[in-house]
Image 1: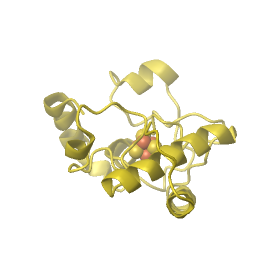
Image 2 (image 1 turned 120 degrees about the horizontal axis):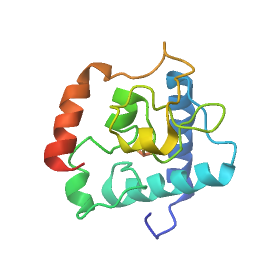
Image 3 (image 1 turned 90 degrees about the vertical axis):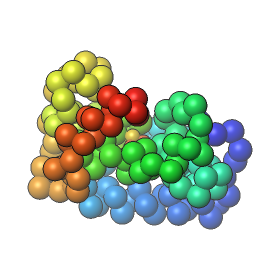
Length: 142
Ligand code: SF4
């Protein structure tokens, strides 16, 4: 996570985005508000530093370089393809990330088991891009 405290304006912008994305995707924020607050803060800090809300739950050898790709710009490709949020920002009502659409060897499956999508009719704008996503994961380790 980034260290600097983001401005109130950036925090509000990310909060609005999170609320809007929950409505669009049918997902929820976590019942433990401290989880959501911490990710919102990280996203807002990256928005200020990089001009884009890069996922704050990952390590990047070069953040500026990573921000040139859309892979981990929230809502990231794993969310848009598989509806999977490894940060737990977008979760089921029970507080788990959806894992049902992930490849079986994905770390999300081994961590959480099979978690069904409670709102399959919503979200997954890039659902047809799984092949490209897995190719990128292999070739760019992202
Ligand atoms: S895993 Fe994806 S959807 Fe979840 S906070 Fe990170 S970028 Fe956003």
